[in-house]
Image (cartoon, rainbow, N blue to C red):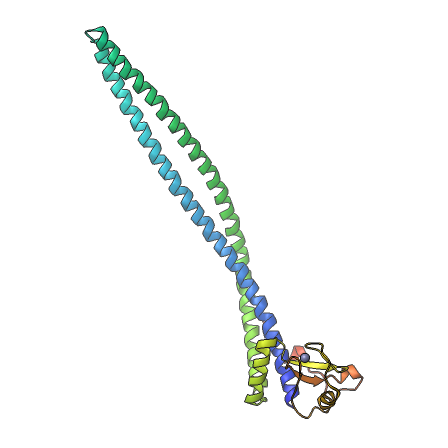
Length: 253
Ligand SMILES: [Zn+2]
């Protein structure tokens, strides 16, 4: 009976979707952690680069201070040999100006050192974060990967089962089922007390009678889903025993 096969097909498809979603969520979490690890690494590299730049700036300023000090020393020698008060004044002005420059450069060096200290602190914090993510990844990734491959195996099992069921459905009907499923997610639904369980609209009595007879494929006139009559809901005993879900697919870890 086509309807029965379609119901089985949908059951498997729902399982495939559910397990695929679980697998996808795990993969996403894993990916997020891996991305987090990578960006923490990048942030540390960026800190290192900035730190090195500041260190180079600092060394350049220190060299500048040294050069200026040497200049002061030379002027100081000439100052002592000054032949006039005017000459003395001129060297003195140079020396004072240079000392003022040194003061400014020293302030700049202090500022650079403060910046370096801040980077150092931030970098430590980032390293700690990297460590934490790294540890979590180490613990989680093996576990997650194992679970992901288990779920993949489960999906594979369902796919095989799906292939087996699909063989019993004509290609035209299968195509129709896929089409509705793509649009409505659920392609085949029960009718309970004249109500389509997909869109919850009423089915005309004549069509409902036909669904009850179960002799041809009938679509809901409102949502186009394929309808079946739910005998259980109406107190009618089902002829066929329910399939045992657990024994249907055996997937082992
Ligand atoms: Zn409907």
